[in-house]
Image (tube, rainbow, N blue to C red; front, side):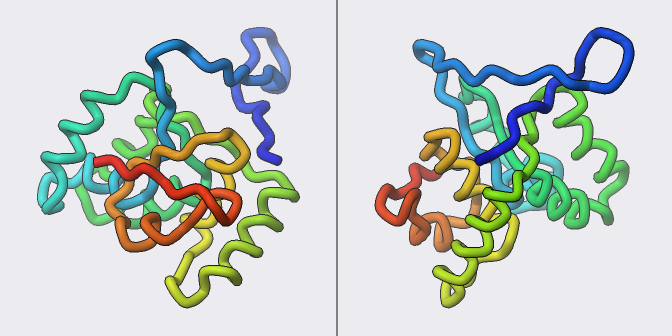
Length: 162
């Protein structure tokens, strides 16, 4: 469901290359949620140290959504150079953003309705949908309550980091 054509082409003209998502031995990709992203950037956050330590242990790619980026940019807007430092995670390749497709948007809306009593916001719904689409069940998040309840395809629980 997710459009995986996000890598820029080295040729002139519009960026049209596609990203491959092969499994690598000993490497586990991880979904990135807003709270952990913000904690990595804000030393005042209670979980800053745990998130930095967890980031150093990650062997795979961090993948996230534009909705999570948007939320993170807003939450770090009060920090000195917060939005720029947040964007650098993407610009330097630390985080791979996977854009939404029409199908994933529909799935996210369905999830928000299903988990409305938790509640689930759009950014969380996009992370769950991305996990379903890429077969990822590990999420780097501080939202233990939400991601402890959310299920991939309605059945499989998330493994929460840190």
